[in-house]
Length: 67
Image (cartoon, rainbow, N blue to C red; front, side, top):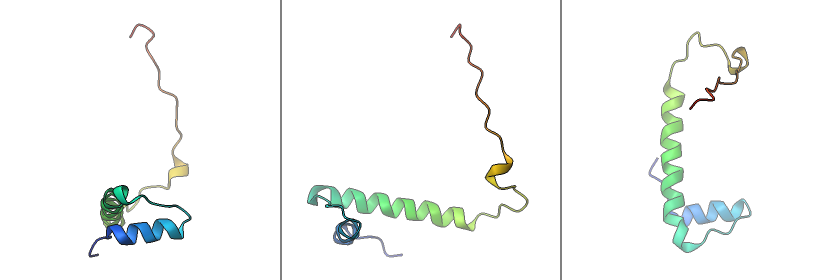
């Protein structure tokens, strides 16, 4: 990917119904590029025998009242 330009970021935001101020376009484009890079790396990971998320139970952490 060649990277999202600030102009493209504004166009995509407008397409989603959001007006992206000119002073935010560069930062939004850079953030979108970073997210894209992270997702690309995650797609390359081999999770093999890792069970899907519903197989795990979230339990509340024990808190020490003395802290």
